[in-house]
Amino acid sequence: MQHKKLQAEIESKKIPINQKGGGPKPKLEIKEEVYLCLFSLRKMPTFEILGLHFGISKTGAKDTFCYWLEILGNVLPASLLEQVEKHDSDYGIPTQNKRHEINSFPATAFLLKTSLEL
Image 1 (cartoon, rainbow, N blue to C red):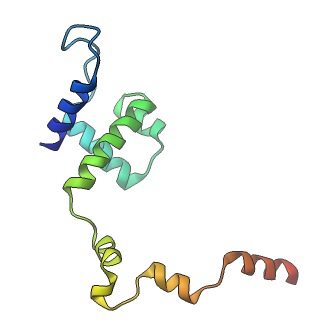
Image 2 (image 1 turned 90 degrees about the horizontal axis):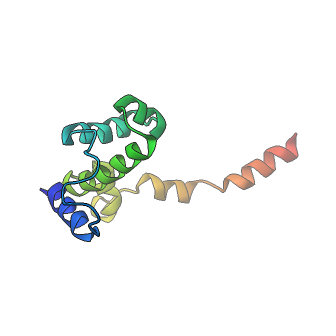
């Protein structure tokens, strides 16, 4: 649903030069584009490797990934960790980021200390 709305919005912003429906056809089907995005999130390959794997250019892989990442981010629920970080006061436990800020000292001080000891 959201994919169709985004496509309609993109099409409405285009300035037509050729006839409607002209131009290159997409190389991947919708399910392949979604799979590309999910595969990239899971394995974290470079866009060049991702493009080679799916038979498209690295720019096409990046554009497809970014397009579907936005849609999937709006459609799918947030992870439990993200939910806790957004509403940490509800749970009464410090999140990892806050615990890290409180209990640790800056890395530069550590590096300076270790370099002086050498």
